[in-house]
Image 1 (cartoon, rainbow, N blue to C red):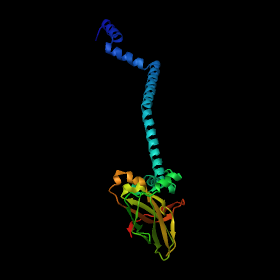
Image 2: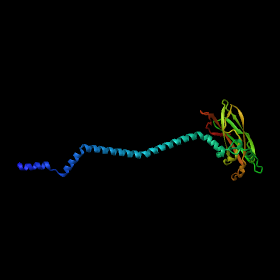
Image 3: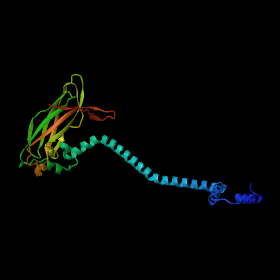
Image 4: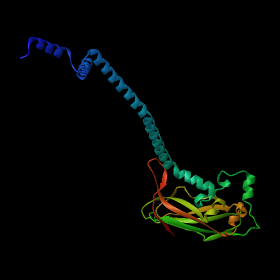
Length: 268
């Protein structure tokens, strides 16, 4: 047992001395538990969270704009496709008639085309070039396999000079014993490169042709070859031109537009 003197020294040392690490730990603990320190930590945490959220919002904003632009582009493409699908048929018809693209004859000035339709211009184009070779024009006709019509040209061929008008006829017969039928004809010229010079003054293409059951009608085609044909060096080796018509069965859709019913064409 220690003497009173030494016990007093031990108590003094125990109460007043601690190691530096323990003291530091104790100080840190007391500091963290202090109310002002807690408030400071909470404020710092909130500030850090707000800064992180603002940074994420800044990073997300360009992607949101990009997604919106993509959506607008997609919607524009869809609307454009729908509009083109409704306008493609009349647009294709107009382009082909004005340019001869796809082997379709152009509409002549005398038939209301966009060419110079002054009397002088028409008279010049409708003046036969007597010094030219005559061109052999042959005719062909066909129908779709679901159209019970007989459709044939009345003449095999005609021979014309450039600038000379010619009249040809086709005959159509509705062979259905019970049904009145509407037909619509399309046409083409071969060789296709001749089409810009094959000008129709009157024809029955792209128009409603209603035939009663058993009815037969004659359909005229009034045309000429533009004299410019002779100035085109690519036309020098062409002496025979074929005009072909194909009839399709047609009906009116819910909007009142006449449209052909798809079907394989069958030559006559």
